[in-house]
Every structure is written in C-alpha cells, then in structure tokens.
Image (cartoon, rainbow, N blue to C red; front, side, top):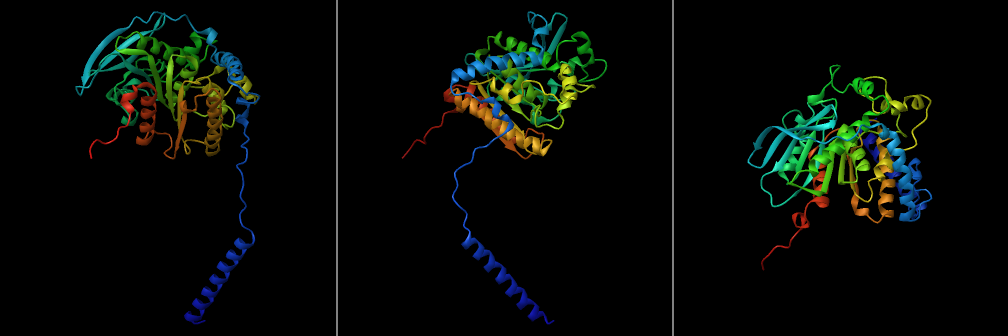
Amino acid sequence: MPLSTLLRLLTVGLSLNLAAVAATADEAPRPRTDPQPIVSSWDDLTEGLATREDWEARRGTLRARYLELLRDQHKPERPPTALEVHESAIVDGLYERRLISYAVESDERCHAYLGIPLNREGPLPAIVALHGTTDRGKEQTAGLDGDPDKAFLDHLCRRGYVVIAPDHFVAGHRIPPEGSYETARFQAKHPEWTAVGKFTFEHSIAVDVLQSLAEVDPAKIGALGHSLGGHGSMFLAAYDERVQAACGNCSAAFFRQNRQALEWSRDRWYVYFKPLREGLLRGELPPIDFHEIMALAAPRAYLDVSGLNDGDRLTQRQRLLMLGKVADVYELVGAPENFAFFVHGRGHAAPHESRAVMYAFLDAQLQPAGAIATRRVEGE
C-alpha cells in the first residue's frame, strides 16, 4: 500500500474516532452533583457528638484509654530535675548551645542539648525537639551529625526559640549494652510499663526543664519531631497540656488500616507497646487509635506532615481520611484554625517545604503577633 494511501486512511480513522467521542459527550453530558458524604472507619471519633460538651465527655473516656495504652499507672515517681550543664558553645554569634543532663528517674539521667538565643528581650517561646531513629540522637537535632535537614534545634534557635533536644532513652548518651534502640533492658526494669509511656514521660520532664528557665515563657511551649520523634510529639501533646503547639513530621502509621500493625508490639529490638502483642496476634486492636490520640490535643494547635509515598500507599491515603476527621473535632470545639496537615510526595524526609510549613505553624502559634504580621508598603 502506498504511503500516501496509508496516511489518508489513518487521518480518516482519527477523524471518525474524534467525532465519536464528541458525539458521546454531546449525548451524555456530565451531570452537576452535590458533594457526597465521605464514610470511613475514622467516623467513630465524632459519632453521636453534636456539641462541645459532648466532645468533652468523650474526651474524658479517650484520655483514660490513652493513659491505659501507655500503662501510665506504672510510671515511676517524677524526680526533681537536678539540671547540670556539662559544656557550652556559642554558635555563629546567635545562640548558646549547652550540653545538659537532668534526672528522669531516681537512677537515670537524660542528656540533651539546650539552645538559647543570645539576642532576646524577655522570655522566649520554647520547643521540645525530638529526633528520629538515629544512633547519635540529639547530635543530629543540634546539627552536629547526620542529616542537616533535621537539625531542628539549630534552625529554631535561629528563629528565636529556646530549644531542648533530648536523647531518646535508648540513643545517644544512653545506648544500652545490647545496642541502640534495644528496649529489652527497659522492659526488664519496668515490665508493666511501655516504651511509649517511658519516652512520653521523659519528654514531659523536658517541658519541666524548659519551664524552669528564666529565658523561657512557660505559657509558650511547643513540640516538633521527625519519624520516631514525629509521633513522639503527638503522644506528648496528647499527654501534657502545657504543650500549646505540636508538629509531627513523618509519624508512624496507626493501628487500624495498617498491614503492619503488629510492628507496634514486635518481639524484637524496639518494642513500643509490649502488652498489646497477644491481642494483635488475635487480630484485636486496642480501644484507642491515632485519630483519637491526636484529637486529645484539641483545641491546642497540631500540625501533621506526611508523605503519600512514605510506606504503604493505601495506609497513607487512609491517613488523609483520618486527618479530615480530626479536623471535625477542631471544628466542634471552635478552633478550626489550630489544626492543619501538609501532605507531600518526598517520602520519609524533612525537606525544605515541610520545614517551612512546620516552622511557620509554630511561629503563628507561639511567637508574638508582631513577629508574623504583614505590612503595607510605605510611600506614594
């Protein structure tokens, strides 16, 4: 077949196909529709609630379930902090970085970096900055090791915050003989407690340390973290009402809608909730989930930052439905402006845009209004 004939036939075929598509569109236009209700497994958060008083009653039930999840009744007595300063350095003429330690149990001390801006007039807002699963712990948060994208202490001190960056209880200065993030020794010492209860209790003690400092405004405390520190900030905000604003970056997946729910109570390495294992093996979830824990922060401010491609695709999309339901609680309590979420496609990371959103969110909640106010340009 000559090439000219073949081209003519292809042109005729294409024209016929386009005409058919146009005819179909003309025959069946898309109808106008109202938005349809979204139904999901997260709806139990607000089911049966009509008023803020309804929520407060449910919140009491959820708070009790949360403390039971942590096994909070098995925590030790909170000790005097007995703060010590071990080293001090001035960073770029902008802030002082101190290596400190303080008591978290009668026989345990936590090491942390504390950053205090030098240029200040009166007390400043303060942040508990929590690291992810890195052996050096607070060293990364201070910008001395690891990924500088996660050097939250350095970044936030430059923005005018006092920042405490503690070691997780099995990292940094506190790595057990069995290795970093091995919790067996902790479980032997506290067989009825949970690792999440332990680190949440310790992070609450970090708030004690901040509030003891003359440089800190005790009413302006926030929390921020990545990965392990990301859900650590959520657990802390739900636990300690002194935290006025919190940001969780790339936090872990929840219990429901999660193919790997058993990882919350695995039988090796880092065990978050040891008492849950038998129930999870039977396919039974605990009576509280992340949407309920996150909502315990309301009406205080909370921001969730996550990657749609951070782990299981369907689980991360369920996260969007979960967050939408938490937003409903903030609407119910009259503080919709205090809840936000940012979703990206950069995986398990703390990229520039995520950091920008988190830092701006904290600024809006904790810095003086003048620090974030916009102004018209002066002139003709």
